[in-house]
Length: 270
Ligand code: FES
Image 1 (cartoon, helix red, strand yellow):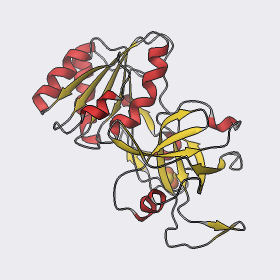
Image 2: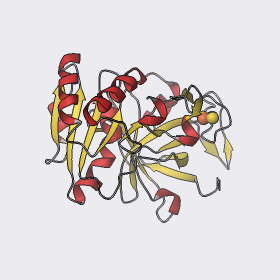
Image 3: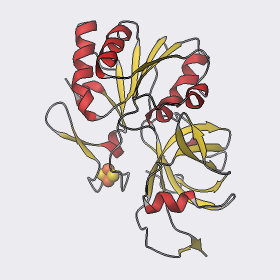
């Protein structure tokens, strides 16, 4: 890996922006770097949470870089999901003023891939697990709509997903919201036969039941039919530290940073 081409000095483009119910850090990244091309959804950066003077880091109290997942790219401006938690690194990023520099490495990760012939895309987001899932999937919507595809979004939500968040979705997206497990199962069973492909943000506890539901409706779970975005403890992003390993369907483990964070459902559940 050429780490030089993955190193960027970004600049804060303005205050935190809310996208589909999730806070995002707007950043300007230098244009013309080939590593910044390609898919957005399912890729991530590592942000250094410390200032630098004359090429030297000024303090080490937050020494680990923080992974920030990409939500949107418009020209040289990227929106990166900044979880609304009390993590000191996230707090440091939240306090950066407009135009302040942020040292980034990335983007890392394989991202979602949409086959050219897929027309009907089903998005699954469990907002009771992570209110940010919807924003993290949004990047797959526009490319599919642009080539004439259709998108249905199924949300597992306790009702807190606001109108403002949903109003940011492109109008052609059909939204279904399941307030409880029975409604989720019904909606899932109804949508699976329609779908050519599924992209999902779900907790790992749902992988097995999703695989079973697909098998029940389509007789088998084919590779390429369902992709999952996995969030794990990403520290090094190059496969060296093993902080991000998750279990696989065959009883092994796999490194999320190097082989994901988007996985085929067949890799993780069967
Ligand atoms: S984050 Fe270090 S191996 Fe994945």
